[in-house]
Image (cartoon, rainbow, N blue to C red):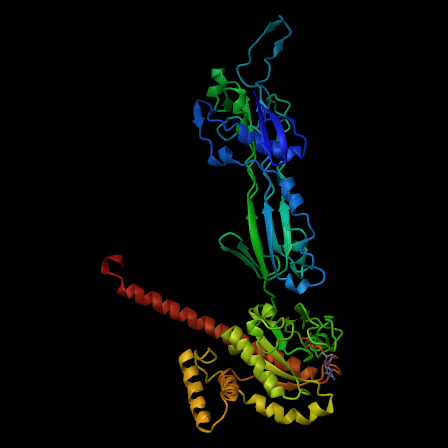
Length: 548
Ligand SMILES: Nc1nc2c(ncn2[C@@H]2O[C@H](COP(=O)(O)OP(=O)(O)OP(=O)(O)O)[C@@H](O)[C@H]2O)c(=O)[nH]1
């Protein structure tokens, strides 16, 4: 039997045995799929039992992976090298696990010849030492398992940029059973294909592209997830439909050559994944552009971020580790903490201005925030207020976290002069976390905010102030009021990142704040656990008697 089929990559003539005799283009992969498509057999037998054919084998589409690969072979977006900050933390990739290797169609071995009286003697049993199951039945070889695809959090991967360059990842297929067509004891299973492990940065969140189903958060080095399972290998069958003894032996047998489709390995899975990187760092450095965040990171860790006197020098988060810093000789500081330097925030960053918004999500996993403020700027308090407000508008939870304010550039006389007064003002901005209740730091309800605005507007209109000015001053006052409602800084430290002044004090404050945060987190965890236990015991009390 022969069939003609066309695919997107050309036409092919396929014989009934699944062999492709004419495949002008990329033959191998197509052959596999064509064989499935052209011979969706209905009858498969194992002994006397008829086997069901799964829908996957019946509906496997004509598919050409090579064609798809060519389509995706472009080197990622054109501006990948010039604007990496737009791509480093998000990517959509497609992975495909390997197909299972094929089993073999085997013939029953010829009966032994008795040389003595030149008479053929039929063997009562199948000859040789075969692999047998616990019940003594013969085990026929299987095709190799197709390669699985696993994403693994790898510390040596920093960004998702390499995945923009190669968006399609195919695992290998399992090997076929290498049989000469005759049942013999030397037959071996086909080799399993190697697992395809794709390294991703620590902190990568994996979601299904279609439907956005969450699959994994690879937050720790070595965390992994299997995203596509390789196809299982095909079974081997014996061509002995009319041989009653073989049919009764329980071996999978076929009745006509077309049933060979049973030996084909299962196809692999293909899945499109959306990967999002959320930087994993204990401490997040936030500040306006040029405040000296990168300089601070370089001063306290061995990281080498780019430092320059123009805004937005930092385009992607830089990471440094505070532990194991022999070069800095910082007096045995060893908290094991990581510090992330993020691109500068500007006013209205939460609305998408500057680069800020793209990076604010990278603060999500931080435990402590360090606000870097340029003490030599015209209004450092206003700078600090802008920072707090932007953080709050992006995510109210950010202003509930413990934070330290670093007043930088104290080597400059204008900064040194203001330092003490600035420290006093900023230290008292906000509420004590002990006093603050759960609601503190949350966005004020719209109602109360508008009510406050209305109050101020009414007052100023009676004094004859223009509407635009009124609104401006109202908003400023409103913002200031809000910052007063947020959590107070744990400490305000003066430093000069350039000359390395104040580093020891800062590192000590960071260590203490991290410890404090840890205690707070543990306390919160205990409280949650207690509340859950209380809830479950209340439910138990409410349960009807017969349930107890
Ligand atoms: N005088 C003085 N200059 C500093 C100090 N720290 C940083 N600078 C300078 O301030 C400028 C900006 O420093 P960066 O560390 O790049 O600032 P940044 O906050 O990372 O800037 P962005 O990447 O734009 O967010 C550079 O010219 C630094 O040399 C300091 O302690 N004293």
